[in-house]
Length: 349
Image 1: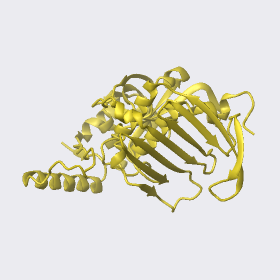
Image 2: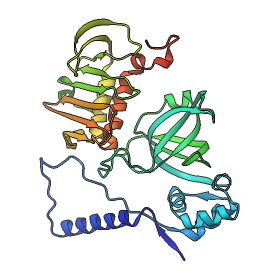
Image 3: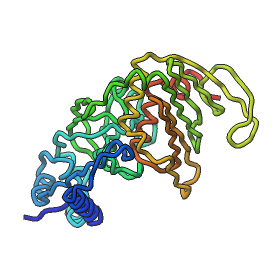
Image 4: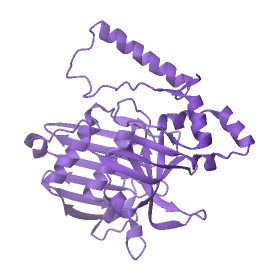
């Protein structure tokens, strides 16, 4: 029987190294609880072995495949080239197959587009991470395993949360990458569930999300106080109509800033604190920066809660759980009401 390890030999060697280190450390009883250690430790995920001959048979005849089997198939270049030379195109062969129930994490969603790049009204394309962004092993948001779910409605997407677990299955497709259409899915609770914030954690709560606009994106700052007041401020073109002030911006240039406010309830404040816990925010580094990339937006997330505080900056680098956290802050306070220019009759100025 021919078997494949998923991923590259480099990844396999890396996993083996981690496994060996963990065995040595645990055998010597060197792991001890310490207040200086991060709140979570990396979760070792065992890569399953796939019977590639079985995968070939299912791919050729039609049937159900797991995501691990699909990943092994997509890395089997020799087989795919032979199939293509025999007149069996990847898209048509995948269309005969279905994805078995698979668990992933919600990444992002976008409007579906036609071949002419026109948006399809009311239809969304969902990107799902297939490797756990909260495992503690993810240090680069740009590197991930995942696939698309095609053809979701605005109403379906409105019920989803960034980083939420999802169990899904459906007909396989190819849209430049692996995808599922006619999907059946179930949104899952966090596992493990995040603890309810204490009164002490909510009493001094203060959160700031700063997004500095890069190419094609708006920059703004959202400040959330312990009484639930949310303040939005931006000097970029947004849909905000509010108080206008003039002062120097971060580039030491005179700029007009527009400010708007709203208020959220205690349930939303508690949800925000849970998201910081889920991201294990206090274990993150103080900054993640990749200046080899230009014209990218920069970010900073800061929190004060329960008598401690932390601030983390990022530019084109950092773990996915940090970026998911920023999206969840936006989602919980509904920053779309200020930022999304495509939801108003007139475009942003």
